[in-house]
Length: 216
Image 1 (cartoon, rainbow, N blue to C red):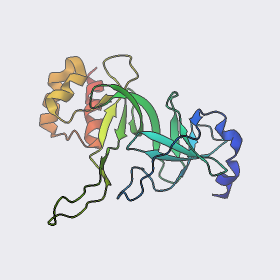
Image 2 (cartoon, rainbow, N blue to C red):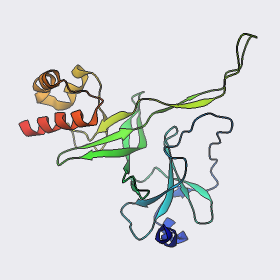
Image 3 (cartoon, rainbow, N blue to C red):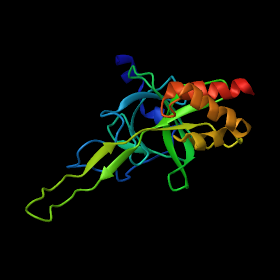
Image 4 (cartoon, helix red, strand yellow):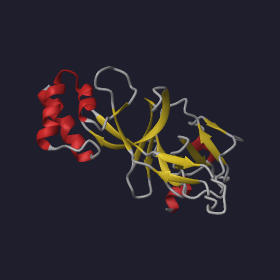
């Protein structure tokens, strides 16, 4: 760990675009956390092994925070694409990508890379919900504090039907996921039925995508 600290210096931030003096969200009195980790994690960004930066991922507002050597917290700009490799022993990797949110609008966030095949990559996006504080309206109720709760994570995949670099959400319904496989939709539906694939299970998704590419 001493070597990691030795590598962190102000020059390591010259390669990144970030915002200073930006209001960081404060979550005082809120139960739970919007962050993937409680602490800042030593991270290599874009494979620059010569420098390690301390990073914290806010899954609720899709922001990435960096802690500078002087302790100042800055927000990484989303104008660039980044790759993150955590150096905390977890071996987790994250990437920033465009995608369509639940409202159908183009947005950008960070995703954990959970599988990389020859022809495709599968990513995972954590979903964290914020519930505001609820004030009791009668003597039979109690005040409820604001809280963050972790919802079910969502899988995304590199776009199979175009050259777009925008990630595509993996549907959890058989009929919807078949649309991702173009001319092989019928055989894919049949494979899901025969093999009893679960569309929210990473191992089954890998098997499903491998089947698709094996047929091509």
